[in-house]
Image 1 (tube, rainbow over the protein chains, first blue to last red):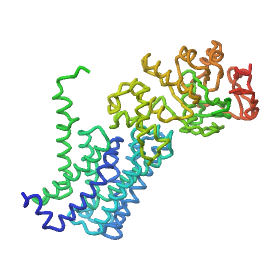
Image 2 (cartoon, each protein chain N blue to C red):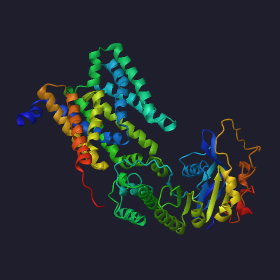
Image 3 (cartoon, rainbow over the protein chains, first blue to last red):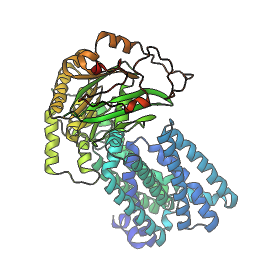
Image 4 (tube, helix red, strand yellow):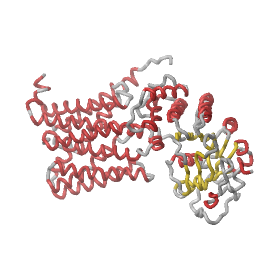
Length: 288
Length: 283
């Protein structure tokens, strides 16, 4: 048991780093995912993950596979797309799904173009699927900083973010925070995706954001426990995924996401609000 | 007190350069209870949005001179009923004007939320998820939120839609209580009997004000008939509204222009309409 569960993390430095990195990532990304899901923006994370690509590619083109330039590039591209799409949806008749699709497609095409200018497809795979088992100190510090910023921002703006999700028109009638808080939130999404792409890749970082959140929805009817549960599920998936990857010699990113996916599928069926409890078991009803 | 809570000066509100409220002049007396009446598309909701500031005026101003705190219950709430919140969370949003983003909810705050729930007859609903409420229960909860907001100016946009008679009665009592507490209340209502029975003052809108003043006067049949005759449709080729020269409008009344807005006669009158036809009080 010890050999199976604990030893890999004790004996190998790269496993410790991978664990530390992915756990810290879950800390910030999972609650952000909960709010994305509650705002019916689950696919926005996906779109944003693609949108980050050209920025990361510019960093990659000029500096090679280095975390700082690629991260900064990714952040810039992500913020441009988020602000652009957010602004179009706030100030025109178009809804956010359409504007987001438009902006991310432009961004993704640019990104693919740039990567193909120099790199081979192996490099592109690297950018897209990440290298959680090769996290260096720089990357860990970056992920820690992102987690700290995310948690602080969520705590400070919690009430506004909840109000903006629950009743945006009300928030606008009592406060000027409505529009800023939307952009602050989109900023957090970008930040966490950028943090995730080094560890998991742009494609899979969104999985760690959305799957635990989607799974947690089946267990609770309140936001605070939902965020806590999402983080717990994220933690569990990271540990399970890394162990799976270690023992079965599988790529770590997909292993983590598939673990989270398994939790999601189990939750849809057996969660307190899942299929089994709401559709199959409840034959009886109360008098009032 | 005859001080104005709201003053409209040549207020035009609308969408895509088409006016929905056209050159509105006048004022809402502090502590008054006003019903806003009119056909669909006559600008009632638009006026509410303009007062709250969610919609910016195309021209003119809506002055909230004493900076009254506003509580607004919209007709089409953007409330997300699937959001995992409890009734008490929803009602606690009403504490925002007092506690803001970071202020801690005190014991008194929580008690006040409970009292508000009790006042709207939702005792024992505190922990219920909002997606389990019926339409009427949700409306009661939203009234509780207005209670908690403790606003000086309360705007309710069609609060009685799809609400049963008992709930309407309860909500009317709350509105009267606010009126008694000298808050300024404006309510968009469709049921004219309800207006005649409970609202001292009425604003009858048909994009422009048809009549405004004491309810019995405002709701006279000729006014209602005139209000009904207004043209609801927008015309893409409608001429531009120029403030400086008159252009033809069906009955040639109630169209008040910018230069008229300065003729204020303060005789304790709540509303002043330079155009005699539109100001029933002036008669």
